[in-house]
Each structure stands twice: as structure tokens, then as C-alpha cells.
Image (tube, rainbow, N blue to C red):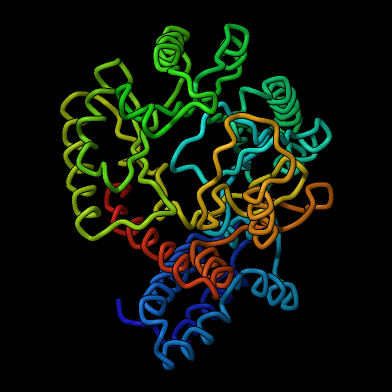
Length: 428
């Protein structure tokens, strides 16, 4: 796609405004399509400009394209001045491509593992019941009839009483508001007790269970903070999860040096009886062209093998939204800060702490500084979740702004975006 002139982008925006202004309160499919086309064009334009960002002409073009950052907020103001029939349907159309119906909750930053590719800094911080309640209340104010609450960390099972409280509150509020709420939880699988499994099963959670493969692959990438070999415990808990009948995905993260192992890992995990498997490429590191090509070859081979053997390859479903680096889901941190995340890449590897108590390590300070760049509001004062929506273009521009003076980190981010775009056919 050639670089689109700002005048043409403005025409597309004006067209979307006219469609929204004339649409009925329940929304407009044509307007949604127009906005989706504009979003995709903006993303591609910014990508092309980033690849040639050292040229003066590119910098001038960037300034023109940058004016479209969070354009939906300005569009809503213009529609209000025109006295358009603004209701849930129109708002849903306006924000359809800029927000998802999901809230991530970092219920704790504590974790038993120190994964080599994880950029979530570990420190002894946990969410209070009051912050969790406010997060659930915010999600339930969504314009959507179906919403998702995703428990994250750290290791959320270390804060299971809070998970239980938030899920029960969300379930009760959803019933009163005639909404449907789905629960997700990402876990390393080391704390799946019988009581927790019963609750997860009864409340129809979907678990994302992290397992990178056989013992060598797992322990080399996902070391225990205490230095212990936990693999047999992990395998037992995976088997218990299967027996409990809980819906889950197994997620295997692949580093660039291991790009050639994707099919092998996929077949190994399927051989353990897992029927929904997802392959995540590591972010925050550079993938060479050769490594990207090998990853794509291996992913395509895994997709073919999955189809033949009745295994669901999650990457090939619509649930996989690439580039994942730019998804910018609405995320609530332990202290009540609402930000776009869930991954904040600071270009630094979190230090090993050995599980020892820590107060304010350098990595935590770096994490908090980067989180504040992407912060949106305090959860107690936040309004509609949709208001904080961001397109992949919005997230891309915000990211490059944050790393404007750190070119090496900016190049890593662009590399990861390029890889995600190449993986898009997998999720088509």
C-alpha cells in the first residue's frame, strides 16, 4: 500500500462522519466499514513512515498523519455539535474498532517464575478489594452486552480470593444489567488447587495455561524464582485441569533462536491431550528476517498438522488479533491505575530477585514510569470503557512517541510490529 496523503485520509474521516450523522441510533454497518478502512490505512501509513523515519520528508508526513491520533474523540464532539442521535448503537459503531469488551486486571505482581521473555516486572504488589470492585463496576458500564474480565499478573492464582470476589461481583452485576460476562485467567499452573478448580469450572472460566513444551524447553525459558525443578508438578496440574473439564488454552512462547521448534512443540503438547494450543512469539526482542521466515514456515506446518489431527490452533482463529504488540487492551494495575496494556515494553530485562523481598528495585521504577506514559485515569474516576479505546494506529503512534529518544528500543518495537503483520494471515 503506498503512503496515503493526509487530504485523502481527511476525506475518509468526513465520509465516516456523514454516515454516522445520518445513521439511526442503533448504528450503521457502512460507517463501521468506513472507520475500519480508515484505521487500517492509518496503521499502514504510519508503518511506512516509521521505516523511513530518518528522512526529513517522512518527518513532515508523520506530523500530518499524527493529527489523526485518537480521532474518534474529536469525531464524537463534531457529531454532538451537529446534534446527531447519539445513543448506545451509534457509540458502539464509533468505537467498534478502537476498543474491545475486555478488561485485564493485574491482581498481583508476585510470581513463582522468572521467565526470560516476560516484561511484567515482579514485585510484592497486590490489588485491594476496593480497586477490584471499581474495575468490575467500570467494565459493567460498557456499552456492549457481552464483556470479558481477564485476570492477569504476576500469577493471579496467588491472589485467588480476590479473583473469586471480582468474578462473583461481575456475575451479579451482569445478571442485573442483562449482560453476559466471560472470565479468562492466565496462569503458570502451579497453584491449581481443588477448590480453585471447582470455582473456575462452576463459573465457566477459560484458562490460558503457560507451557512451553517438554521439560528442557520449559525450564530453560521459565525458570523458578527459587531455582527448583517444578516440571512434574506442572504436568500433574495440566492433567488435573483436563480431568476437571475446564475450558483452557495451552500457550507456548517461542524465542527467535527457537523458531524452528514450533511444530515439534505443538505436536508434543497435542500428544499430552491438549486440544487448544496457541503459539506466541516473544516480544521485546529482535527477530531477524531468517528467524521470521522460519517462524512463519513452522506456524503454517503446525496449522496443517492441527487441521489433520483435530486440534484447534488458536493462532488461526479470529481471537488472535495481530500485531499483538499494538492491541493496547484496557488494563487495571494493582494500585488502581488504568492504562493501555497489558504488555509494557521498557527495553530492559527484569532483574532476577531470587524470590527475595524487594521494595523499589530499579526495574519496578522503570515499569512504573513506562506505565504512567500509557496511563488513562484512576479507576475510581474512569467513565465508559469505550471512551478509552485505542486503535492499533493510536497505540503505534503512542509507542513511537514514548520511545522517540530511544531509537534502539523503537527499532525493536517496529520489528515486532512487522512480525505481527506478517503473522496476520495466520489469524485471518
